[in-house]
Image (cartoon, rainbow, N blue to C red; front, top):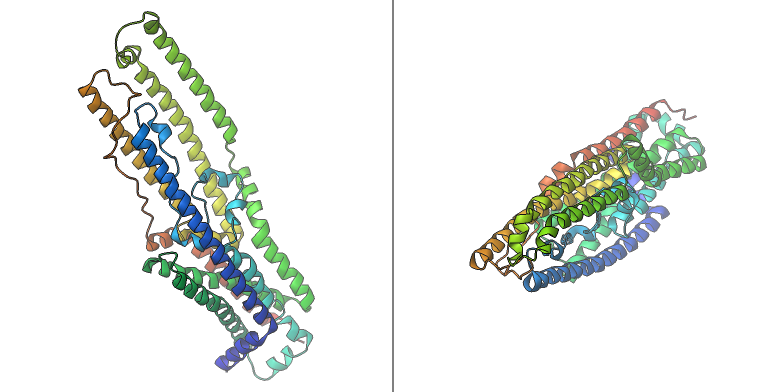
Length: 448
């Protein structure tokens, strides 16, 4: 009986005009988003290669100890291959910006993640908003239950049929998109990337199942399909559109940090103090016009000691602000994930695609370690030149042809999934919450 009803539900859903229109529109939007994302990926990768060439040329031609910091491009993160599915964080964005406004990250681009999160979630909720209420209006629900059909069996059949229908709607266009990617061969996807795509599809079904269950829950509660549609769309707007803004507002109220302008002003004042102290320290030696190398004058004036003192002060301000910003970002992420399955879904898919917050933090960690290594390498090169030539200054060009290269190594798929367990749990929580609520309500619903 159960399997027979499930098959009937799936067949009825597939033959429904809503399924046909939704499938066609979703296929067109998905393929269009893949094409747009692929073109954007190629453009971003070309820009990344140009920036690498520019930095290499600068280091080969103009590198010296004094200006080495200005020759290193701060952000050289290659675009992730799976960013064609979820662009997530831009390679050059500052992670601290999320605490100010999370919307540019949560809804940034026309990519498959955007299509599923917006369009397909709305289709899922519109699939189920009248699935029970129309039976009540037509007086057929009481007839079905009067023929020894248990309410549990009816509910599970409708529920399973809807989830299978959503899976079919998602799988077919996704399969077609995978074939297109293979045929064009413009992006080299590894086995791990295809496994990540598989998990993206699976979690997308889970996410869409949440909205199907929400529509089913509303349909059981209401006697009118029109009223069920209004309530369902309102909940969709609440979860998908309203929650990100609300979460940013809540996080800023829970934990306040100084705005970036205040920090920039503090650093500018600190730099003025450093310049003034350096001038006071060097002025007596330049007035006497001593015929000794510049490096000796700097040693006598204690330039390195002064620079180190102010460097420690600057690092203290920057590290303190970064710690506070990161804490507020975590609050924003936690609040937005709890308030809405939509934001949890976005965080989860971007992490699987190596375009999320963890990926940016991992890049910053690796880049910081490399910068320390690189600066130590430059200091070593400068010391070698001083041994050969005592008149060698900080402005003289250094030969850095054997310098180390920075290669970003992202986390593997298992590590990315492990770091996203909170968002996975939240999605499952919402899914089972509305499933259990729907089953609970239908057991006590008046079907007359």
